[in-house]
Image (cartoon, rainbow, N blue to C red; front, side):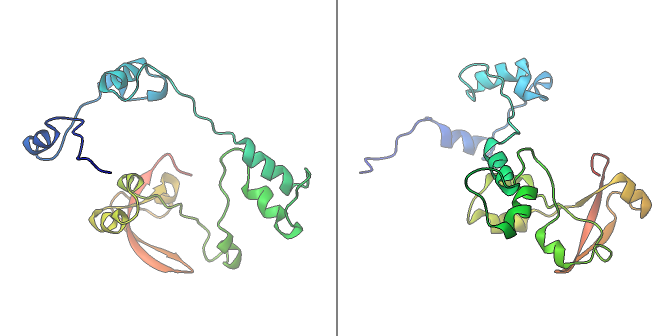
Length: 183
């Protein structure tokens, strides 16, 4: 059924070659923050063709669907989960974002492993699928363990120091990045 490729952007390949396979456009300084409500960004996005018209957007963090599960876990409604799962559903299916300890932690001592590390993939990993992930992991040469400032001070750690991170799975050695915005 393919009747030949349609070139929607004439000269695109030549532009990539001329620019070393990269293209870069600076976002104006006044448009770099609070993009969801920043008119300068909205205008920039329209000029770039990202949006058809300025359109501020709102984040919806409350989930009515999760609230229905949460209520079912508490025993409300016509359809209820099995009794042995209700407390877990009530804990985990909350309508607002929350954090809870991993379930495997139930089998591990809080004394031996008092902290939990939340994992964060490098940003490029969020824009890839399937077979790209294995090679992306190999080219990311720096992926530090972000730790709260108070914990860093308690252990006399600074940016760039190396620490052992241990769990019941094993241990790895990682560089530290101190972050004031963590608890």
